[in-house]
Length: 120
Image (cartoon, rainbow, N blue to C red):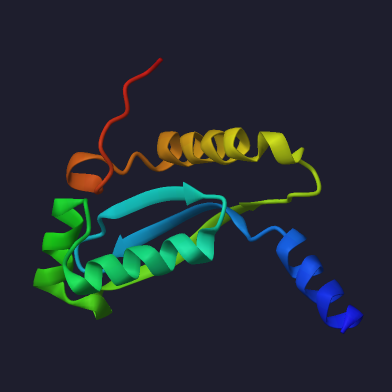
């Protein structure tokens, strides 16, 4: 029983893959870039929302409805090594990495599904 508890504790303490991902429409090339501290979970969430027609990004949802699920790819762009970033800085590190990718790819307007973010 102690071994089982030890395994459960180790699982709970193991960080999930965190970083930046993209959803790409393979028919028109438009891209959505996002980030999360649990990339696999967030990608699954997007896929589920798109499948049931409840995604908050209306343009992405419309293209999903029009083109079908097979027209989209989900890809991890970059992950953060949790051993190199203090736990209390994970959210900031993920946000900074997303900014880097947004600046690089510029998935706005006709190029993508992201909304322009206001500069602080």
